[in-house]
Image (cartoon, rainbow, N blue to C red; front, side):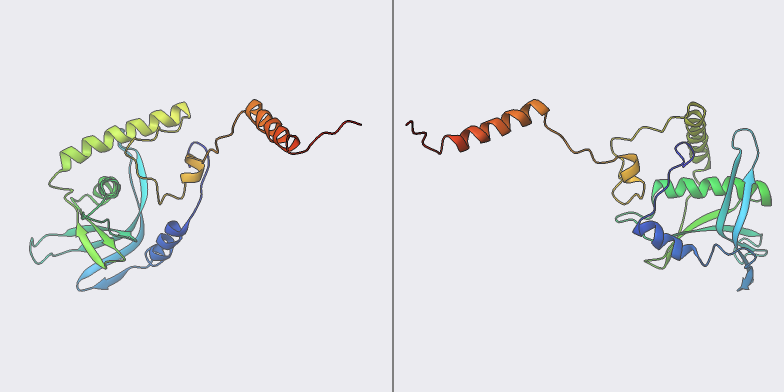
Length: 206
C-alpha cells in the first residue's frame, strides 16, 4: 500500500468491512453498565521511537472499576474469525499493542487490550501489560524495519513460513507464473507431429 500504491479486496476483506461498519462510526459514544464506549477513535504517539497514528475500533472507559477501584481503559479490536487452535494471532496482538502505545500516550493511562471475534462472539484479553517489555522491543524493531523499507522504496521479502492463503494482496504480491516451454522445443514438437502425419500416407510414383 505505502510503497507500490497497490490494494485489492476479496471475500475476507469485505466480510471484515461489514463487521467493522458498526464500530467505524465516529461520534457514536454511549453508556453501558457505567462504561463509556467510543468507536472509531483516532490516537497517536509522536515520541521519536514510535511516531505512530491509528484509529481504534472501540475504546471503553470505566471511571471506577469494581475490582481495582481505579479508571479502567480497554481497547477492543474487532476481528471476523477466531484462529484455529489458539486464542489470538501474533500479528493481531502486535496491532493492538501498537494501539495501546498510542492510547496510553493520549489518555495518560495503562490500558488493557482485547480482541472480539465476530464468528465466535467472544472477547479475548491480550497479555499486553504482562509482556510489555518484550512486545515494546518487538514493536520498535518492526517499526525500524518498516521505515527502512520505506526509505529504500523496497517491498519486504516473503517469509518462508508466511501463510498467504486468505490475503487479498496475494495475486499482486505473488502472481502465478505459468511455465512456458522453449520456442525451440515447440518447433521440434510441431515438426515431429507433421512427420508422423506424413508417414501415414503411401507415396506412389507414376
